[in-house]
Image (cartoon, rainbow over all chains, first blue to last red; front, side):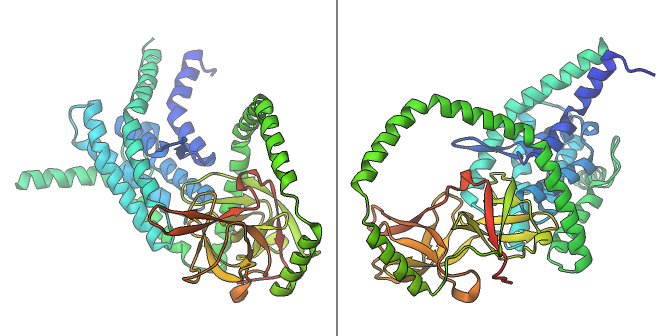
Length: 168
Length: 285
């Protein structure tokens, strides 16, 4: 049975988060470096989609994406996977306990998520004898937090577009 | 109090143990598996090594394919940019040319200096049939590691710890070997510590990367007489690398507090490397 244009559009839109997740892992763009600051696209992507539409990103794919990132970047295999799964866990917990959905609440709950994820990341790297630039990571976490609302709006538009097409 | 504790327990169980909507794995199972994988990285056994190298080779090749369009775009962008900068570059080159003309060294002095250095370092800088060339297949600017992946591995007798050269300049060492690929840790990386010799002052030091373009010289003697412009070579101490591989030139930066920081301006531009040489003769552990 042939797929209609509407179904193809919906499939593409539904697969967008997953494709984006695998693309940034394979392309080594989990941390996007601008001239004066950097943001962790991986963290925002996983936190948002696990919080809003868990069916769009499977935990298995998040794990796979972490493994790919570790290999591409050169970290011990499992470190990024563990960090990303911790973000997914916190997002799942917040989804379970939250009744009211708002950008502000999502944004504020992103602070403990980042703190927990980065702590686990640091501990895992420390135990693996890897030196990292802590100041860089501090700045990265701040800008990841600051940029969250921008990506929240972009992803929201994507969800609304999917809804519009499915209701059309 | 009891009710809130119960609610918390239910929420945790629901988040970690339930597979959720269209999920095939539970979060807890995957987290435990990730921890096992991190632990497995520390175990060095042949079967595990084979699995690791196979996975890495497959991911490197896939990444090289996936990132080829973006690499193409950045090449086009840099080509357009370089065309736009032709005029400025011409002016700059003219200035540089004039400066260089003023600084022409006596070739006899350079020959003498070269002979002296060779004697001092007791080494031969000759091209050897044991030097193999490799192409860089992945060069991801990572905040964690300043490294790149080359297209040669154990299939071409590459081993961990081998020195990696750009032309004849030292740029890093092999830190991870797979069947068809290897990872090179650059001297600019935070984890890189290389024993070096500064000439002509003759001081030994450790070249330490900081994630930036210019690594620093550490553990120099207290009253050292290192001057700007002195050359830095591998010292060959502890038998890790061959002695006398050129690395860069000293730049001394005087801070306001009165302390002087000794930086090294590298002979090779790390962002412009496409091919590297690896000496497979001097095998290290």
